[in-house]
Image 1 (cartoon, rainbow, N blue to C red):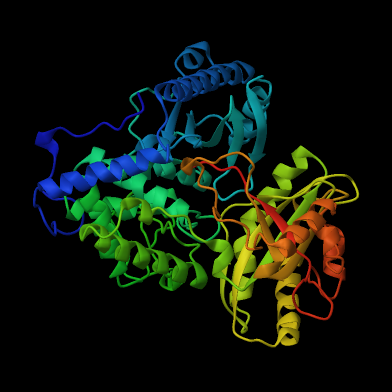
Image 2 (image 1 turned 45 degrees about the vertical axis):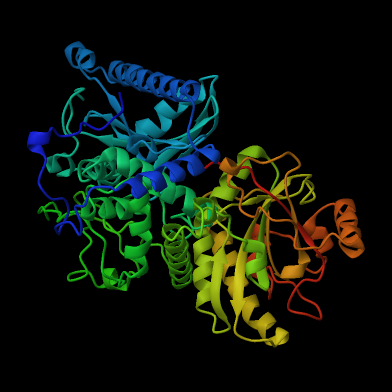
Length: 574
């Protein structure tokens, strides 16, 4: 139902992409053996949904589309639209992202594009349809974010996270056979609709630009699993998101059209370990229509020349999917790709197994110092707003730290950690983020002064945004502390974890299991919250952050907080 309409053999071009293939060799027996081993390894991480889960996902999608079509008819009646128009208004929801690519994993979300007729107002989707969704008993955690770059409604439907974007057609009805790849679709429409259309158009185009969709999907699943295990899967935090990884894998498929999955994965690391950035990765030459839309072109746009790792979408108007990559994340991404290449070489030489490629990154042992960012809130509704705001801006803190002469690298862990209850006076909850730091100086006092400014700049930004977007609530607080590695205690979840859950740090706590470590844990459990243990790191209300001289910084005899901070592994999906 949701699969791409693959061209027939007679329609297929002889070559894919901007260049001819590097090799058209057919797989040998050894390649097929390696592919079987790779598939067996991936299955051990339980990334595939079973039939019941797939059916549930499709059932939820169909129910959502039916609800959307019902709403369109209701809104037409409210607008006194002629009955003949109302009956034929149609309405369609297009899945895109990992679900449409066929690489979604167990527990993954669904990205969906809702398409309506042009006589509607966009505002109605985020008010009237939002209200209809909220009234459904199956729906939880619903939120409308109209101010986002791509306006979206996020919700959970029977446990499945769904992100809905909305676009209007320049016509009175939405037929079932609508072709969204026709460039005329984005002519003379609202830029927000263009951005909403872009997700599906890019995803569908990727599927049409690879020679073997099945091999592409399996190879992409492998790369996504590797990226998540190595903590480099997050467009929001400055790494690469699903679309970027898909374009990179698709390019490898284009130049090795007959290769089996294991070969594609091996070539992925070999090619991109040698890639000369910022030469862009592109799947096709995108026609530049005269629609006056933003179009990635470093020859014309000076800002495009500053992009470190351009990975370009294959649909008009072409965009750089990796615009958030920073100096730090660029270095981390390249380090991980080179590590992957080294392991793949050993796999080819039968000196390593595929499981070594997917080993989880040892984030807690990698750095000597960490910045711990903690946001506190009083209600579940405020959690959604507060966490969403802070997480969407963490890369600004990374950018501020990168400009600090004493910080050579700032590495954000891509997953938030659940904080402790009673994180503020309102008996609320908190969420924490961890940033690994590589510092250029051993003078702690000098570090303290420099980091204070970086932390204050960030908290002032959050303060301003929280007030301007009406997110601020009494009891909301934000704190930033800089700690040494030995002051962090990682608390894994009590139950046995499956590899598929891809929890960030899988190793034991950095605190050794000796008497001293045991004593430290006991003290921590008796403490109410990390923010109370770090007594000098005042957890201040957001509206006070801009009024303190060293906002969010741990003061005292050292630049770094002495007491331990407990981090509990978050539940995640792959």
